[in-house]
Length: 92
Image (cartoon, rainbow, N blue to C red):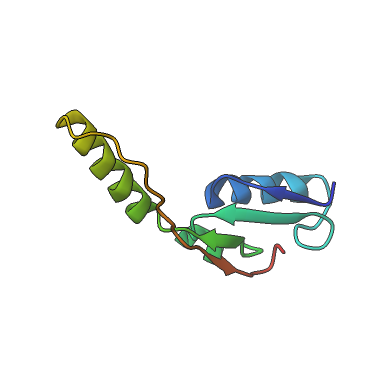
């Protein structure tokens, strides 16, 4: 296995722990990447490489769409583009 892509940084921290318990090194033996840019990921050892994703904006967009639908407004086809930032740390 070359690497793990974890749904959250906290899951990535757990993956790093499991990798270390097996005598391997996260970042060199197995790459680990999380999502969310959680503060814990920046202070863990090794620090977690991550994607900084705007969960708050994604939630706002989803809530607005749901409120519009519940209010009886017709569903409209739209494309919402949310960008992310790659934060390279020690695990990638």
